Image (cartoon, rainbow over all chains, first blue to last red):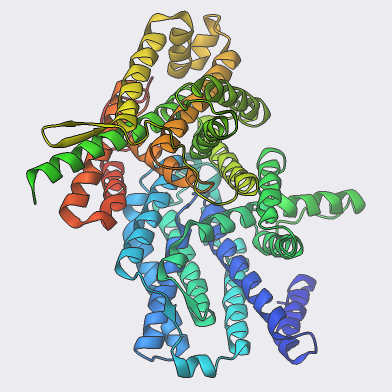
Length: 314
Length: 294
């Protein structure tokens, strides 16, 4: 099924695929884009549970951490091919979500948020205690390090998540999730299994965060294992999703582009000012524009072309 | 292990626990009355710490006397924060209210942390007075003055809060608002004023805890998350609204941490509180003590 939206998406994807062969496809730009893809992947995967079902998961970084931990171990220590290691990492993250999900999803609203926050902190502390040393690429791998496959892997992970979210957005499963978000009681009364939809979203969200973590493990030369479990991965994802437009397939992408642009422009002269600006934009959006930039774009489009339908991202 | 080491460690657990309890009092009050969860509570504590540090460093004000500056400053910051941000969401229904407050607090956390880093750098700051190392010896146990002052101040604050909430008109009005704001409004209580006052009071309590944290240890821009988490753990352990129960739960958390440090080594002391918290949360979402009312 072809339409203009999918067509332009395809053009963007092809553009990113040929980019490393173009003159401006140097190492610095590729590194920047990898960072963009990872942040967008985290925001998009958070969006599946936070945006579509409305459960605020403040422990999302833990699944990124699990993905990176398992992928890195299988790839470096057991020398499995990276794609298999990546799939295993994401699978373990999904299984972790399945185990945690049953008790966690019994918690109402805020308690779910602070429960997941505490859980991620517990994991971060444990990993820091058990694996206190920096995980570095071994000598041979370091000498043959090439950024291009890392770039493609991060791009592929993001593409998979976006395509999945696009499918979810118009599937029966996605509609069920949105029904749970809008009104749990009403959803239940029309035959939507609230718990099943919630836990499925949680597992998928964790799976994709695990994929992103695996891509990070493949990309990064050296880092402390507990860094990937840190709250920063969760917090960036939540903010990006909200600023871009929570509960829409393209919102997290728009948010991530804005985030990386602001960060890159400002970090040249001022340390971390982008976080202050982002914090302010974020609060303004929560108070005044709950749909984020996506809603803003829709409103502008409606103003310019009043006869078009409001865009829900399909 | 010597019995003295055990007793000394457990005593320090109680003393740090008094700070956890103090940090949790304000959060519990605001959560219980306004039904909003301010995750920037730890950042208010951090601001209180810096305020008393500045008063000591620039003006030479004694840290305990600096409370005369810290409490009003935090009260005003609380008023500004409530009027500017949180008052806009208290009209929502309960679920949206909590969710939006969480997100706003989250944004505030980012902003305040970065502003503090820019203003004070990421270095740890502490207050060193001529009595900082003063301690009494009793039966081979050490009783450091500044740490004991935290427990003492905590007990005084809990008694004062208990008196205020149960014996004064404003306190009763605040409790009525927490119980059922519609009925309270019908009875002629100015709900908006109660919300504003409670939020500012909560901020002042965070500032008080911040002064003690800076005096007993140090303050740096990123301590907020850790203290918010501790306060949340205590609030969930204690349940909402019971001030002595909240303070006691803080002390229990401190004891549990130091006990686990004795049993498993220091690197796991942070973990035990979180694990207890998760267990309590999965069995009793409304906490150990008290019910869901102030």
